[in-house]
Image 1 (spheres, one colour):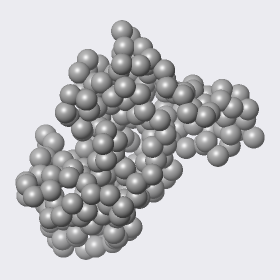
Image 2 (image 1 turned 90 degrees about the vertical axis):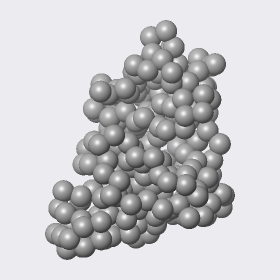
Image 3 (image 1 turned 180 degrees about the horizontal axis):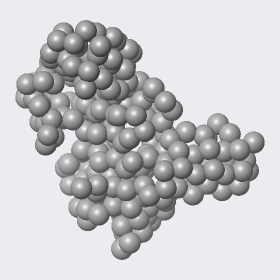
Length: 114
Length: 113
């Protein structure tokens, strides 16, 4: 049972345009969400997170939006750069409720075209 | 950000041998560390949660006698793949918890011949 889903396995975007990566979850107990970037044969690198008490968090070119009623979050990257090309994973946890395990989505491979 | 290291970065072993992978938090103390496994083009699958000074908690379907986890100090957790077989070949990643976030190591590529 996949509790965190990323339905788009891949996405191609032109440099300078906006990249939107989507993530859906099923467990209403999740209250903390994160996005990680991963290159092949490397560990994930933290990008941005959001607590369920917020609906938006912004850090530079990265913005995460959370829609709790829809159990949906998205990562916006603007403007997209070729160096953003990687696999992006969303993760969910019940951190504030004391459960620190992360459940990862299946990942979306982003390719930013120069 | 916090730094987590893993050693070795890659290992090739013969079937039937045991392999130990180390995970260290270099600049912070981690009471909780996690071990993940990633198959090619798939998600990171949580294998177990390692708590300093106590037994690890394994996820459903993960054999605890196969994947031995030891968290002897606040900066070191080890994963030993016992009697490794080719199906154990995978990319193993550890993470260490700091606050709400986990900081990931660079991963270890295990190939069992």
